[in-house]
Amino acid sequence: MVSGPPGSGKTTFCSQFITQGVKEGETCLYVTMHETKTELMQDMAGYEFGFDRAMQSDAIQFLNLVTESGKRTITQFGSEGGLTNRLVAYIRQNDIQRVVIDSTMLLQHFMNDVEDEITGFLSALKQTDATTLLISEMTDPSSYSDEHYLAHGVVFFHNFLENGSMTRGVQVIKMRGTAIDCDIREISFSDAGLQVHADRKVET
Image 1 (cartoon, rainbow, N blue to C red):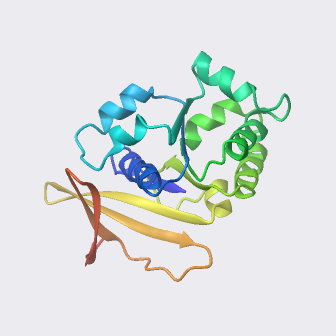
Image 2: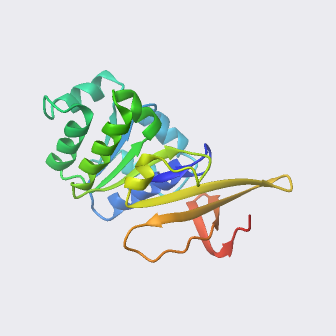
């Protein structure tokens, strides 16, 4: 789970995750409900970590679930079980290794009983061989939702307005089965993308 307020770096982080997958020869899937492929590429156009080339390659499959083409694509994968079963079938049949889903808030529009269905959705994703990043709009890292409890890991991006300037940071709140540093570490953005400064602790 990748959480944080708007503009904190979640999409950039996930775009770098997908791009790195392509560089390592993995098959990737980017699922969205609010942006076209062109818009996403334009958002990342200021960076030079290779997202544009990756998105134009055959290694990344892009799925916008609110477009007619996106709906046609996903409905080919099973006739029952709604979005959960179809997306899982899509991941398995296409041997997807890395997935980004943007976002939990918009995902809820596809569900009748959000609490039950989001639990089933995350449980089903865990049964695939893919590493999945699920973007969650969230402003308070202490305000947990069901999906945060269910996720193997929770990474939170922070924005702090301090002395008239913005300080950005990232914090690993949870990572199951792994010893973690829970301190907030400073991040910055450059042409190369998002960079974590592990030696710079953000004091709050």
